[in-house]
Image (cartoon, rainbow, N blue to C red; front, side, top):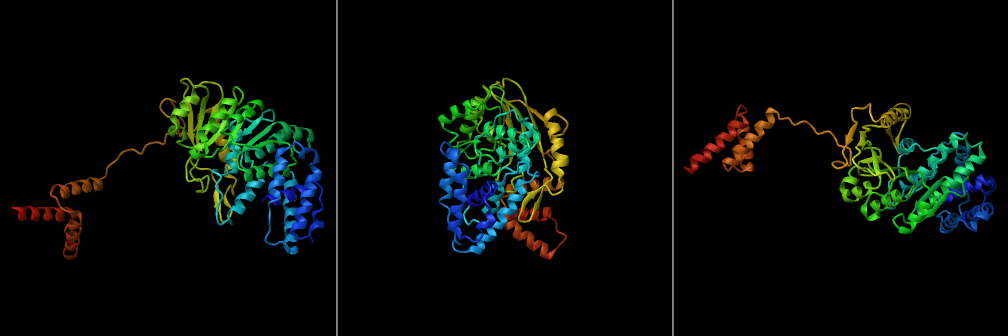
Length: 437
């Protein structure tokens, strides 16, 4: 993935990859890194991000070392991919996440980064409900491959006229996007992602968002919007990460976290501590299938407003029951009929903005609930249920073993199909009673 990304960047920087097709892997690898070093010579001196990319790049090996045909095919594919990335159709898709998910299918052992990559349509929803604009400073403190930041980049650039506005692009890329990632592998992918989209200076750092030192870094960036899908398990410090972010962003910053439905309920003592300083405005429960079974957990978007105490303000909640996506073989869940894009996303944005308009809408008291409350099934009992309970009681009262009963019942049914279950139970009970007497 890193090799592919670096080849794409080299192509963007003017390297004529078609001239590299006769090289073996070692020579091709050296040519690509040379182009990057020359293109980013000034930035390399002070940009830790570029140094880490080079460090990870140099570790890459290939099992087709001397296969020039394989290298030629690789170059052809990189040039095809580059064509799509250079077109005006690009609108913030996370290229490295696409590569990661695709390559990950073929790995015998899946890497564990404590993270599930966020589907593109949920990224879009979170971007919109937080009201991000080109004037915001956007943070993802567990940025993975950079999906939220890449999407924000695309939307903010479009807002200012698209790629033709070079000055606006540089302003957004250099001064508006901030990311933190603890895994060096994922951090390298995020850096490569940014480089692919003509950005060498986005404020990405490889660090642990649980550390106290990171709090000062966040505070200095004057963050106004947060888009995050932090790791869910407690061993990765999810509560500490969320708290560090909330406590160090600007007053009034809108912060959207994608978390398991019950995460704040389970960690209620921690959440109550947050609510003394910050407000939980909205909870949007998402469809269970959004991660295509990979997360193994139901999730919600929790929308906070920083540095405004909750007090007794109620929390708006709603439930997006389905997103209109369909599972495509070997390609995961996709909006094939554009039902989400054209119908469901506009509908839910309206509901979330107005805090009304759908039967799932709820208002929660923070002292009682910190998650969307699924409606309870109305209690009902059928005649069949009643008979079963009565029968179980009769067996218990008479001390009849269920296995004996089943055996006797089977024998009764074999000889007389007109005998009912009740008759059989009563018969066994009476026989037992007579024998005891």
